[in-house]
Image (cartoon, rainbow, N blue to C red; front, side):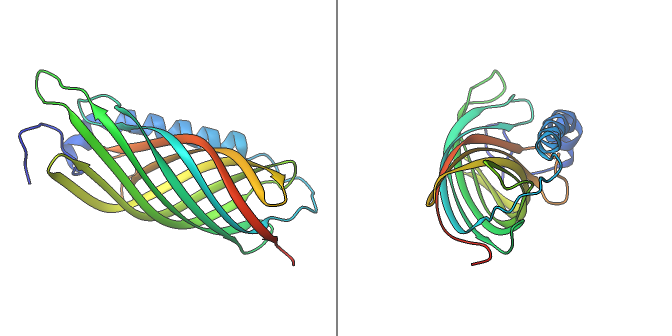
Length: 205
């Protein structure tokens, strides 16, 4: 489906050729963040909360072909169940909205990104702070005006949480979203924001 505005929410070889380098730079930046957060696991008798429900406001941007990196905002909801002291099964839901400025070649508008995914969290350490790597797959949806597209997507990220009360966690997360079969193909989506969650139970109970 084609619209007058020259912004394509669909994936394609043109976007891959022209914008792949920029997307790969952002993917590399996220990968470096994961590596910096992934220090050796400390010997710790701490336990993960068995259940977590968290929400977060998001600052986000998308990388579009010929339109720069429109900034936006949104929110996310995350559910988690700890299988062990290291691994958590998680479900994520997010929606962000981005204002795309007009150019000489295209009109402006609002670009929407939605994601629903299932995946795994791996706690690198359990202490005062809990850095956790995230990886998952799910549905990646984009919409601009009357044009919309949905594909399978991949999601990778890092969050760092602190359990301030037995039932309350606070933290910060950064995540990268791309296509499952070609993670650097445009458009890609990067998000970051603080998070607050409720938790109960403990692994080993």
